[in-house]
Length: 202
Image 1 (cartoon, rainbow, N blue to C red):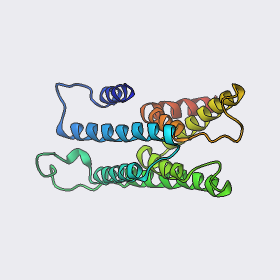
Image 2: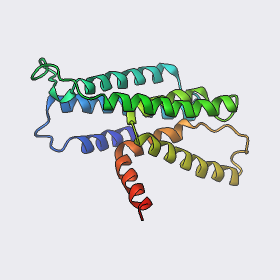
Image 3: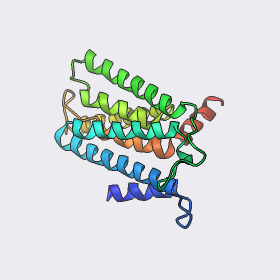
Image 4: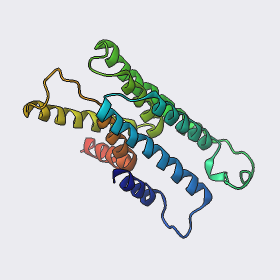
């Protein structure tokens, strides 16, 4: 049910009219659906088994990298049924560079926690997931995703301890917080950033 809702939200946010859908919009739509499916599987797997499997993370990272390269080549000029209109047109490397830098910064932050705690506070799978998130979301939406994840994790963690469902040193998977944070940032990241900027100017 969650996957179906996510697919519908992606469709609604990316396609304005079903009567006038270009081939490139179909390509982008299927790309986002594939990424959403990967994230749903990772969410369920980490929640159940406390692990983020490489066989899901690495293909997801590879798909986003390929898509970012297409963006650099100006994806809007491409056709699924022929060569790009007007030949190759290289764009400024904003999407690719923004994604890589965001991914490296997010993964570096998580890696620092992983090494400092010797894996007790953060698993290495979370480091790889953070890189994927940064690559997928770019800057500054990665900040929104991490803020939502840490805020939700703190609230729920404290709640579980208060209800005596978990101990202070109990292991709690962080992927189920990072992944919803990713979706929040994807759908509403720009609005959250703009709201924060307006708030800081008051």
